[in-house]
Amino acid sequence: MSDGIMKKLPQDVTTCIILRLAVKSLMRYKCISKTWCALLQSSYFINLHVKRPTTTKDELILLKRSFEEGPNQYKNFLSFLSGCDDDHYPISPNIDVPYLSTTFGSVTQHIMGPYNGLIVLSDNEHVVLLNPSTRKYNLLQPSPFEICPPGFDRYICGLGFGIDFTMNDYKFVRINEISTDPYKDPCVRGNKVEVYELNIDAWREEYYEEEKLPSVYWSPCAELFYKGVCHWFASGDGEVILCFDMSTDTFRNIKMPHTCFFPNGMCYGLVILNDSLTLICYRDPTCEIDPLTDVIDIWTMKDYGVNDTWIMGYTIRPLPIECPLTIWNDLLILQSKSGQLISYNFISDEVKEYTLHGYPESLRVIVYKESLTPTLQENSQGTQAQGF
Image (cartoon, rainbow, N blue to C red; front, side, top):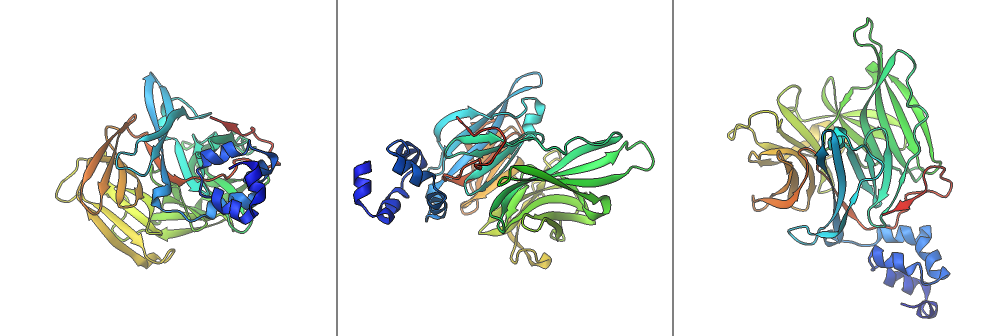
């Protein structure tokens, strides 16, 4: 569509037409004229594009994985996959993960999102905000609160990414456990929470005494943003899901089903299924699997935040998995102990292996829809947005 034709049509008609186009085409159309560029970069059009009607056929898959190249040396890749076919073929070449560490810690790097098409990658210290549709990304400026006072140690135990609906602002949250030398008496412990706000490109921090928060622990399928709240697994008075409201900066706990307790040789994952908070319970991959008893249980919370509304949704036969990655359509996406991407179909009971693999434990999956959401605000002082 040329600039001349665009000027002859009413703007609402033009907008309706180009909303149907792929982001790759829309990026090219910015070069047609200043008028096109202004429209496609406007918050009006970007918001319309985010809210446009879509189906599961419009969904794409982002796969993060690592490959060992030498002693304590790893290569980290992002793969962009189709969601329209059963084999999930690549739709573009792999790209290197920017900025993040390339040591063994690469295996446990975090990937969070999406929200409005934005995704966060982090190795705890560095935080990269990425739009996989536009291939634009930027490194968030480091927190000024990272350094601990002499005599104290910091352990990063939880990360989260989402949006503050009240302020219409994207936020990144980092939970730190602070302690003195554990071999000294007493061992003072507490939690420091750092929050980054994209609109003002700034960090702030809050401190919580030890008894205020349960102890967050890492899981490869957690750090979930849902209904304005970030979620993590934690141990306190039993196993709980720790929740952080992005709008009010407040914490609360959700109790897990009565069959979930620590230690019981089980691991857990958090996903969204049918727009409900969903808990996946599976045998610890370091344990030997009993094919008669070690099933995978999937619980759904009928009324979000109401502890006694967990309902058993599925019980799946034991599978030789490392961990679940996500639920998508009728598929439970998992990684095997050998680092292979596999899926389980709830309807057919079929297990499928894909020709996609990485170093064991390194696979992460995000399902997203295309968007034009920028990774940088106009007043940002951090690293300027870059593109692949």
